[in-house]
Length: 258
Length: 258
Image (tube, rainbow over all chains, first blue to last red):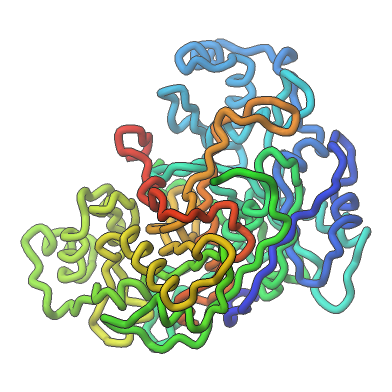
């Protein structure tokens, strides 16, 4: 898998008409019923939709903040219950200043507030945590989608679980892949040659992240569109579930900005 | 401009058949002749193509490295002439270790080697610098494209100049917009409300970067495809050239990772 020549054209299609989601909903089936999927498609699902269906929603009033959370909350002017949840989801605090709390989550993701937020949740006073294991979520969704709508003649649709992260040095958020199944997440061109036969330099392409970013362009943040189909990248779709988006995490020991 | 509801569908189309490019080539016209552009299209052009046409290619043998470049080159095991060019393009060195040189360029971009590389160049021993002013490059290309192929009935096609940058914390490169014209680069949802009427938190979307990422998916790194059309995002395309991709640079004073 991976590499290959230009596909020439890509289509990115919003999946509309899903109901308001809650814990236990069969998200893969709900998407498959509305998506007219073809072999080699990639289904990009928002983290928020996955978290809701997996019951990863918490009521802040039910959270008892500890001493560290209370201290940090005072300093950052944040809700102590929210900070308690962030710390519980995190392996390390990287920055805690100017009202911003950047951590490395237990999954190894570096983001604000351990990926916890309250937008697009129906109930006041609730927040959604990231899925427990987003690669496992992607694999389960892929199986559910295949069971509900198995297109014939190619690999089963791949699944990406996507979330919006801020970035250092650049303003604005961009979507990244926090989980995936059936997709080559990183297209490694190192050692291969360009059109002139010169060795390409350090070009491993974060395909899964770019797919997540492309999908985000067809949904507005207030639309609640939880899934998008990306068609035309079957060269990155595999029969097996593959290594998942955990492959995209730079090992902390090799990171110059931790 | 900006915001609005979901478009439902996006198409991303590679522009093929361009000749090998060199200094002085009319890049905008060459693209327009091959692209069948429609009003509201966004033309994503690779930095390498822009740099070649702008004559931003340098022969390493012509560069006389200074003392700082020689010292850094020895420590990082890099070519002293390349390091001299990198320093000349940079406002600050952020990291110089483990063979990696991360700088902030004079434009304010944070990337490896000040964005200088040698892939997809015809002549051995040459490298391409980033455009002098990528937003100005995008504006010029937009004018050239409009002159060669002015589609009727909507805003002139927008232009994004895109390059692949590495990221902290995540492996693999992703494309970002280093220049743009006629495009809302940042879609600011702060203060607006989600589907449930709750205020959205810190959601300014780096639309221009996500467009650059989407475009990259239809070209392989060895294919030399220098331009891609993104169709279906006319809500972000404006009659005027707008603020450019410089808007996406986080002010160093507000950055927690410098």
